Image (tube, rainbow, N blue to C red):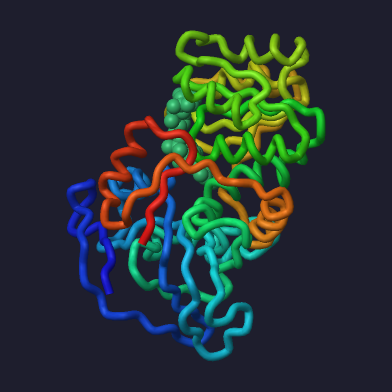
Length: 336
Ligand SMILES: NC(=O)c1ccc[n+]([C@@H]2O[C@H](COP(=O)([O-])OP(=O)(O)OC[C@H]3O[C@@H](n4cnc5c(N)ncnc54)[C@H](OP(=O)(O)O)[C@@H]3O)[C@@H](O)[C@H]2O)c1
């Protein structure tokens, strides 16, 4: 079978198409024939060696995929041949609070990922996907959607009428817009692009802010929320945006620390955190039980993931370059 590996060093030039022996499932494992995958920013960092420079190579990249179960190993009863399943990001995190062990084994590094025609994973590490979604659409759920779901619903406990601010219009943020809207919240979206803000409004954004021309967007968010401040911020910028997020949020509000698009380290004035009883909570994707709950909600509301573009899986390099360009709106996917 064909697969892609990061081979002999990091960088987009080191992505290599290789022939690997057809894998077979051992006891407790399932064999998937992959049909779709989606890209996350982490995948680009992994290929470039910026996620974990010590990651042993070769590595099959990408964490998120959908495939059909074509064989099950001894003792597997959770899924059966013919099921359409998604791969879980943290293979051992089935439910409950995180532990080092639960967070350790993630697909697309350190474990081999899904950019292969056939993939073997433990049966616990897959989950059925919503019926109304195509394979490509469902492939967007394991990391981006679950991260937004965990931040808003598990950690944030978003309630109808609350205000959520999401930064940018990438994969996590567009799911956050849709999930927060589904929960009855009103959503403020920031973006570098007026066109993307227009699209966000069409998706249900309540208010929008063009952040390059509004560097004090935290203050603008407070004004838009009627002076109170927003209840939740989906922080995907990281160090470069956190100060404005702390400004945007109401006393007692919640900032979900998710991404580092604008840097992972920097100077931040923590005074607002203590003076206003803010809650900053880190998010690492989420567990399988949360994924299952999210899929019930997505199916019940017939939520359609926002797909920017679909590339053939053999065009993975072009797809990763497109992700790196930041031109996209929502998710970039691969079809096998
Ligand atoms: N902790 C976790 O579990 C977890 C899970 C998934 C992702 N992440 C992280 O979250 C971040 C987003 O991931 P993603 O996959 O959604 O990325 P993505 O789809 O590549 O999103 C990129 C978009 O983010 C926006 N952006 C970039 N810099 C920004 C800034 N300074 N301020 C506001 N928005 C900015 C831009 O939107 P506009 O073009 O509209 O400006 C850009 O198009 C990444 O750092 C990723 O590693 C973390």
